[in-house]
Amino acid sequence: MKTNLNSRRALVTGASSGLGEAIAHMLAEEGAAVVVHGRDEARTRAVADAIRAAGGRADVAIGDLATDDGADRVLAQTLAEGDVDILVNNAGSYHHHDWHTATPDKWSEAYAVNVLSGVRMIQRIVPAMVSSGWGRVIQIGGGLAEQPTAMLPHYQASLAARHNLAVSLARRLKGTGVTSNVVAPGAILVPAVKTFLEGMAPQQGWGQTWDDIERGCVADIVPNDVGRLGRPEEIAAAVTYLSSGFADYINGATIRVDGGTVKSAF
Image (cartoon, rainbow, N blue to C red):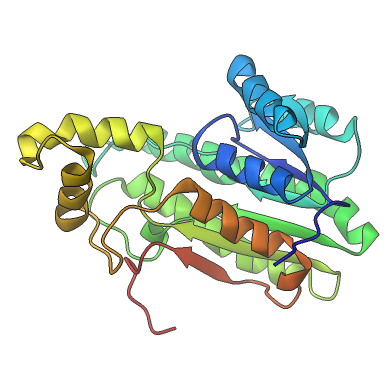
């Protein structure tokens, strides 16, 4: 499948590591010019340098999207080299809190980082997409938005807001040539997750090899029908598909990439 993204330019927020990094790399491999966004300049530039070294096109935008000033700075850096055709709202974070420790301030912080950062970029970038008659807006959501657990209530609620706003935006963009969709990862094996699970393994009795740890994690924490954790490239592939012309007829949808963790017939 040739996605033909050579004429497209994409901004991937939170692309200095993890899922965002994988998404930026794959979009570049498929021909898109990519703007790699991050808050840490050294890490962000390293991702862009790696894309260029592999023959791709990459620019850098540094800034904190949780503030209006930061979003304005990111926008200025992004548009310096051209308009954006594809916006991937991936930037976000979470902290381990439960209902006792997730204070209202923690809820506000979660929404500022995980919801309002995406809203800021949508409001700054989508009008030009509408004017051009083509565009893609993709939120990185998650299964916890649909099937929350007792833990991380603030984070899970912010994920649900991402899903909801994507559908609302799709309705608003009716007939414009701009689509709005969600990619919802399950548990994905990024470096931070691997380190976290390796630290948990002794107390959980999962064994010492990574294969044993992964099997134990899937059995005890994130059961799914495939029997393993997802890989960042699998999320990047879903984003790349939705970014392409093959997805012109997909709008207001959630594409789950979770090995079957979320059980739903619809």
